Picture 1 (tube, helix red, strand yellow):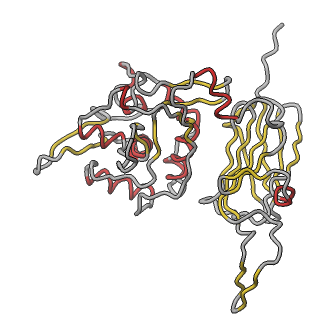
Picture 2 (tube, helix red, strand yellow):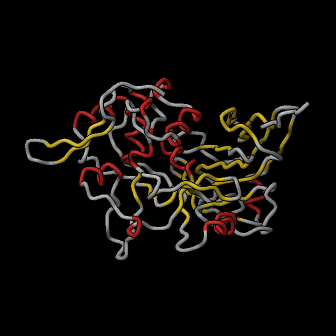
Picture 3 (cartoon, one colour):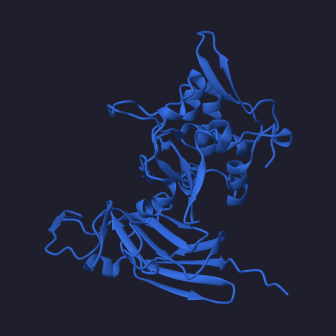
Amino acid sequence: MSGTGREPVFAEKSEQEKVLISLDTEDDKLFLLHFVIGNYFGPHLHDDDGNKRKQSAFQIQASSNLPTKEELSASLMKRAELERVYYYVLRNADPSLVFNRKVLSRYFNEKRKASNVDFPLFRDLYPFKLHPESRIRNQYKLIKSIVFINDPDTSCMREDCVDRFKLLTGLQSFTLSLNIDVTEVDDEPLETLGTCLEGGPGNHDESEPTLEANGVIIADAQAAQMMGLMDIGECADAYLFRVSLPGVKRDERHFSCEVEDNGRVLVRGVTTTGEKQVHRYSQVFKMKTHNLCPPGQFSVSFHLPGPVHPQEFTGSFGTDGIFEGTVMKKLQKQTV
C-alpha cells in the first residue's frame, strides 16, 4: 500500500464557514477505499428514540464532536461485512482501482507510524479504544460499535472529492440496497458471544447447509430440498464445492459468495421463484403450489472440512443453476 500526500484526511472551511472533509491523497485506490469506509459506515451511537439519522465517520469528523465510549452501542460487525460493502461499491470500477484482501488487511490492521504517514488508515476513522477488534471462537473478526449507512449524506465532503468518487466508480447515486449483519450484544461478556452469532452450539451440523430466505431460516421444507443442495470434494491442496441455486439471479450486483479462513462459506443472492402470481406476456398465472424458494433475498451457509485461504478462492455460476467454487487449503507446515 502506497500513496502520496500531506495529511490523509483534514477538515477545511469554505466561504460559508462550513467544515468540509477532504481526502488529500493522489492514489485513487486509497482514495476510494477510505471514501467508502468513511461514508458508508460510522460509529454506532445509542438511539433511544429511533429517529436519529445515522452519522458517517466523516460527518462526525467534520462536526468535531467525537463520541465517547458511553455514547456508543455494544453492537458488533464482522469485518468481512465492511469488505463486502467496499467490493460492492466498486463492482463497476476498473479492477486496477480495487485492492485485494491482503492489502485490505493492512489497511484495517496497521497503526499510524512514521513509515505510513502518507496514506489513510482505518484507525484514523475508528480509534481502537472506541472500536476494538475481537474474535469469536477464533473465527470471525468483529469490530465494535460500527453501523452501516446505505444512503450516506456526503454534504460534509468537499465537492471535488464527491466528483472524483463518482468519476472513478461510475456511480451517480450513493444509495445501496444491501443488508449488513450486525450483532446486538448489549452487556453480554465477549467470551460468550459464540451463542449469539451461531445460534448456540449443537443446534445444527455445521457441515450441512443452512438456508435463509427473507430473514427466515427454512428447515425441513420442500424449498430447502432444492435450494442449497451441495456437494463437497477435495484434493491434496484444495476443496471444491457445488451449490444448487435454481431460480437465482446470476447478476453480480445481486449475488455474492464469501469464504472465511475457518472454511465457512456464505452464499447470498436474490431468487425469482415462489411468486403467488406469474406474468407471462398478456397472461397471469395464479400459482397453486409453492414448493420453490420464496422470492427475495436468501443466504446459504455451510462449512468446508478444514481451514482455507479465502484470498485463493475462485467461483463460477453456470447457466444450469449450479454455483461451483474452489479454494486452496490452509495446510499445516511440516516439521522435521
